[in-house]
Length: 342
Image (tube, rainbow, N blue to C red):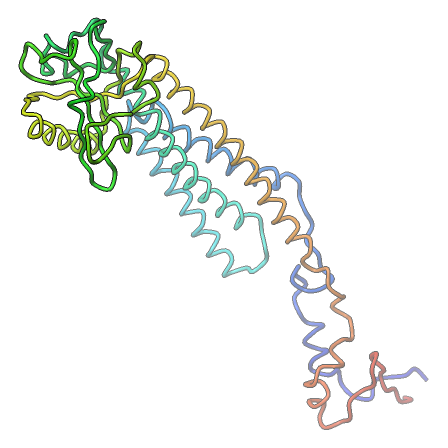
């Protein structure tokens, strides 16, 4: 006679056998598809390239409203994707690439925008701002008024113009803002107004007349400068000039501030080159980040379901199994079952 079970299937075994066959169940590994894996690298990377490019270069400077509209659209779609992924996860807990790519795209949008704005603020915006202003040659600080050159971006001074270190001074607000006037042969200007000031930060003494700002401050060949346009810095430089006016008894009606530079045109062009270099670095770094992210996610998915089979008998050691079988004694180890003849 064929053997049969002495009793009905134990509740724990029945529950185990009736578990849904998902990748979360041991013995049911997920199958990888190479196409979504590539998309999960290149889609977030493309979003990063777009956001970083929009916020790094001339388009943001010339068409800021257009860039803002595109970024709003990208972030709206990104947050929408994350919301859809969250709803899908509640309805179906199966791990999918959609959840990963939704988060990756949102991260790419945030990082791309942040990196681009940093690049734009530090290099691109100053470059485009200076390019919009004019270049002045043979400027004589002793004969020219600052109010006549409010649109100057790069200034080349006449041969007899130089920094007057004895009338340099500073203003300190956390950072030390240093200023020094440009004069003609060290004499007072014919206009009676010291309107052209070389500037720098944390490059002078706070107790005496001293100015050591920029790599070319001590060079006798240096007779040019690049206009300072940062509003906060200009405000603090004005305060430094006001203190110099009070200290030395001079007048500065319309001060213009600039960094002292031997080759200002080359320095300004270097800002554009540095902005592009930073952009390339950000793009390459982003590709590596998203590639590593997909690799880690792939490894995580690949290990799902690598435990023992759903039909393993390890539950026999479960204390609940030993006590819940209607008062019967625990079964022997290794899944030994009791049979009785028909």
